[in-house]
Amino acid sequence: MIIIALGANLESPKYGLPLQTCQAALSRLAELGLKITQCSRWLKSAPVPISDDPWYVNGVAEVETELSPDELLSLLHRVEEEFGRIRTVPNAPRILDLDLIAYHDVISHPNDDLVLPHPRMHERAFVLLPLMDINEEWKHPVLGKTAKELAETIPTEQETMEFSSE
Image 1 (spheres, one colour):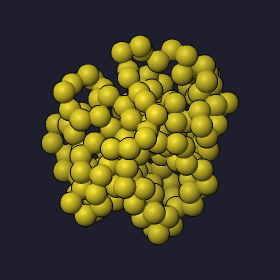
Image 2 (cartoon, rainbow, N blue to C red; image 1 turned 90 degrees about the vertical axis):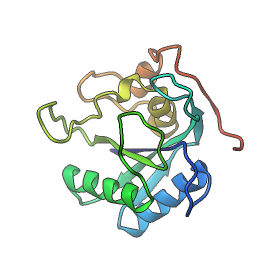
Image 3 (cartoon, helix red, strand yellow; image 1 turned 60 degrees about the horizontal axis):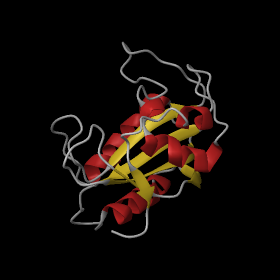
């Protein structure tokens, strides 16, 4: 299972509000050859770490591709740039954030350019709750716990809410 997380908390001049930007990004990824097999519901989540920044719209998608993990990450970064993301400081507000969360059962290490599974995914409500929509029995290849088990340990200060409107 290949899992991508999508998020945005700034309006895009071209695509509009964060939800529309995330939906447009999914469409763009499909245009570029990814097969989107499942997409979660959209959640609103407070920034992590906690700040006064705008809340995010977040979701996850399961995709299929023949691209390698590195090629897929490169594609995600190209789409972020195409959508206007400018990388400044870590955890800054952004027009679009695309993360490669897991690539089947591939495990890479912190000294690699790409760390799989994503090194903080198991601590993030905005990844785990949408992931449970897709497959609550997905098993973290390092920790050996399911998405459901990991979601039970989400830090309580991570606020999320069902997405209704912006």
